Image 1 (cartoon, one colour):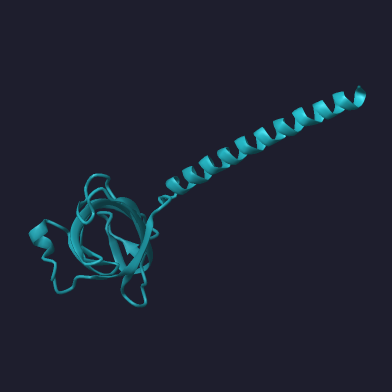
Image 2: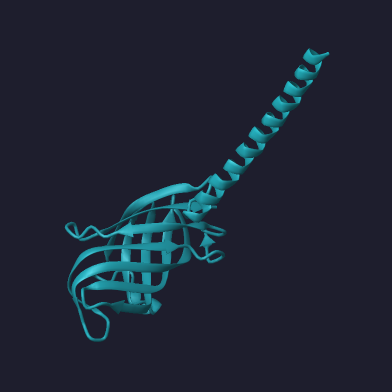
Amino acid sequence: MKKLILLAAAGVLLLSCKKELVENQQEQNELSKSANEIAGRTVGATQIAGVSYYDANDECNSAGQGATYALNMTGDLTGCWYIFIDKFDCTPGGAYMELGRELFVGTYKGESGSFWTTYRFEARYEGCAADGSYLGAEIVGRCQHPIIEGSGEGVFKGVKGRLDMKDDIAAGNYPYRGHLRF
């Protein structure tokens, strides 16, 4: 009888452990999914990459868009990246921060479209002016560009995601990478 009670207790304990293991696995899956979403990456997202360049010849006609300036995009995104600066500040030590909006107009996999982002640019420059703008050369810079939900048109209709750029000071360009989810 004692053996039967011990076997029954062991069975209940085993089933209880299995149920707890399944619940823990479900919790871990949810946490992992949440962590990916917080990081701006979502399950099923398409990774993109390329290089952007300052539009020195104004091929994108940034003034015609009302933009402060534009970048020429190459790689997975090909077209014009219009920058609209909303706010900026620079500390006496040269730490510069800028906030704004951006409009991408171009192609992805040969199909046309557009989308809007918000952005936060952080950099270090040689110095700062009294009005909060930067002075001198850029030493290092990077920015994040979360896509504004619902802003996509054409191939980007319904797109979500984020792009990141890290300025390549020596090469004079702005490599980007990111994730798009359609």
